[in-house]
Amino acid sequence: MAKQRIDLDCVVSQAIALVDTNGLDDLALSRVADGLGVRSSALYNHVDGVDGLRHAVAERAGENLADALRDAAVGRAGEQALRAVALAYREFAVSHPGQYASTLLPVDRSNGVESSRWEVLNVLARILETYDFSGDGAVHMARIVRSAIHGFVTLEASQAFTSPQDTDESFDELVDFILRGLSAQPAAP
Image (tube, rainbow, N blue to C red; front, side, top):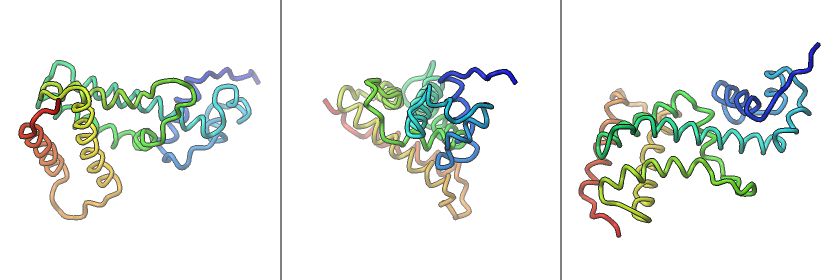
């Protein structure tokens, strides 16, 4: 049997496929290795154990989420951009539950690489510049907006919404609420 060649990209891609199917808690080197047709020990050439794999998945997932948000914002500004980004954020969380969960892991700062998760806030902060928020004010508002959307998608994913009202309508109401708040909020210096 020919020796299977792997690299970090294929290891992380396999891990992402697994976490989106089975959940982040089910991530194990042996499962990734089985999916790649290699021994678990081969993965240590690319990641520092399961913790290193989790951080690599989180970094890639952050990049994927940021890319989805940037793609949604292209050609849009202000309210239109924020609506599109909010919908893209929700869609990513629903379509890629394992990746989304990994974006909430603590950032590994030991490798000196700026986390891709900053890019998620950066997309929101750039949109908020159209509301005259900049600098620290834009970061604070981006955190608030992300927190509201995250709260909704987390409750939705855990099936905590048990009333018969349509969750799409509730999400639209959430985005409307955010937009009204942004319009009423005086810009921070």
